[in-house]
Image 1 (spheres, rainbow, N blue to C red):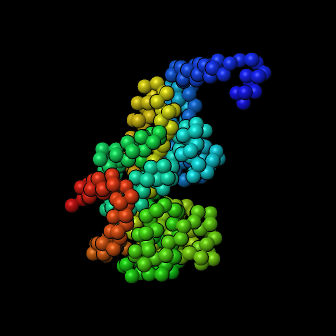
Image 2 (cartoon, rainbow, N blue to C red):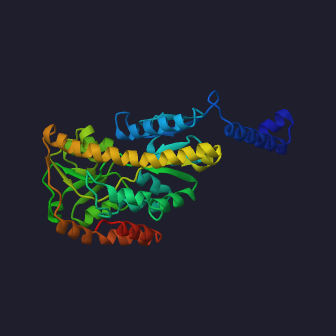
Image 3 (cartoon, one colour):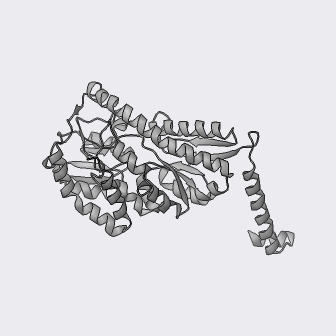
Length: 351
């Protein structure tokens, strides 16, 4: 392309490079002086339907950012993978195709393996009504702060780690899971990642990695018996299951990600607004999840006819935790910095 321009116009390559550099500087300068009449538009992608908590969280983020910047920054949300599949969003940010994405920890881990931390089993003592242990970790400098810093070093800024669901729902069509032996032989769909499947295998189950679009027919056909997913997700999608047990095998560390290059070009006061709203979004997500998960469990029982099992006995949780310790060891072997994250989760564990 450069050769074509040069031959057509007789312009030296250095002049073209200089001109392009000047245009980039002009673009950066224009971005640094937005007004309500000429705002910066941020393209934000996510993979979920507009009826999902995922989208509600982003609507909250959009409303607060636009209000606090006086309309100088407009958040243009593209839900349901309108711009690209969730698996392409990180590359989309790094290449400038999009500016931000509300993603998943398993997707974040494809760029920064340290984010595989959220796949580790029994790290947090949380229930549908009380996720304080996980919330404290996200807010902790040695926890969520370390994950943010690790991702930022790779060119992506983490504005928030904001949940959309309580994902410790082990659902299946065959039998209740009240003890480790109940897991034997059950075939569970997993959404990918590296460590969740290891945990299920150590507990006696068979993990099968597949996209949710495939899972919908697979569970009806009996190819799989169930999955580990969110309480709200189970209800919103009316997944045809018979049993739901609370087993905290992983945690959806849902990061709101932004191209660091895009963030760094914003005026300082707008950067501050994004950081502040991101922090508040975390609380918004936790509050909504705790409130809705409890209500939704009742609806799963009454409307879907699913047997919601009582919480696991603490002694049984400890048995499962002991059985899955090799997963934590494998994670630390892959990511030596991960030991500090595990230690922080343990330090914050309620007495």
